[in-house]
Length: 519
Image (cartoon, rainbow, N blue to C red; front, top):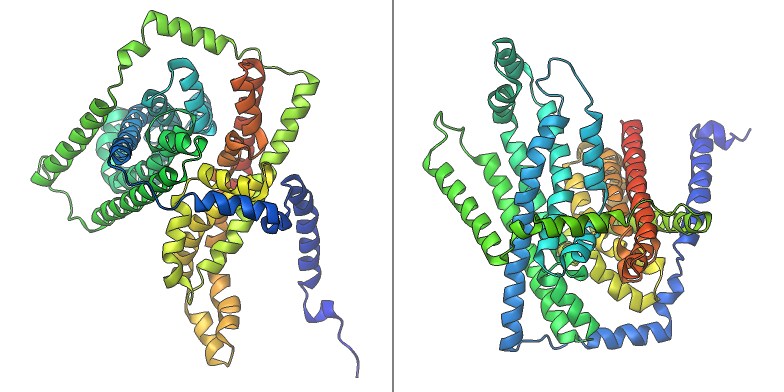
């Protein structure tokens, strides 16, 4: 009797072995750069520090004076998110019109507009907020402007892609009949895309609430600024109350956002007249919310466009040019890029593993609350906690990303697994396979493309967040930027910001290439 070689029994064995070795060769230096040291989590000194820190959170602060400040900060956070989204929408409309190839007689890539969108969305909103705080001082104005720029770029890009994805026949017919491009888009494309455009805008408002909290850590107002003050004063009771308030705010925003998106899916077909009772009510409510937000924040935008403000801004911007391109500084920036990339990849991989475990069908119900709790805490707050647990450095950043992202991916993975074809898994179970094997070889392969796509999309988001976790001592480009801006070394800071932008673009392109290869 002859023995069958392994390669003959499994033709793909060699390819899988080569793939595993290549993956290990790539990931090992990344884990080294992220300074992954699991033993630090169980170090006696670190456990004592984190235990004392968490013990200080109890009981939460419930004094009437503090709760008054907390309520004001919650309203300010909602107002910053709403006002920022309004500004983003105003920015996005003309940019989406210019960037989109929809209803054009001659297709064009609009390189200038698309490059501008890349810059706007490629620089994290926290970096914009930090810059605006340096120019205009502490307060919500910096947060609103930062959200407006970053989310304006995001909205414009997605709006343009949505308009390009719908049926172009109605718009082309209008163009051939002599209508202008703007009218062709308004009456030929927007009615088809209205639901998707609105749904994405609602989702972005939900994200803007989280972002407005994060920006408060650099002095842009809201709950984040109150949390930063409590953490610096080591007031755990106040920090616990703020964190609980933020989690409730995120849960409420998720609920409202989900309800609005479901309402879009179930609403009846629109009537010929756009001025029905529902439309008037929605428009009135929206205008009231926007007006109340700007009124609460009391931002004097006119003061931002005075000659004095323009001179101050021009002087500030001039300090960033030319960027520092000396060999020594570029070496430090290159190290920061490598560290940031390592933080994003290691954090995303750890989150993918934890998210998949938490999304398993038999474990999903009891862990739904845990998933929501993990993703409701901002990465910067997690980084503050993980820095106490393992010390300052990139490992704290990777853990912070992993904790937050596992909540995000766990929810997305659960939906993908629920929507995966059930027939292969049932067939394996009927043939005698255990539930675990049926899931591994029947359900998981059907959901794998969606799971990988979600992971890559989240990696694109995490590279931007990894670039700013250094603001609280978690390494990478963010730590370089925070130090240089604090020391008013604007030329060096300019180099770091350019590096952040280029790294973000490179990751976006790499992620898109990988998704195309998997199709």
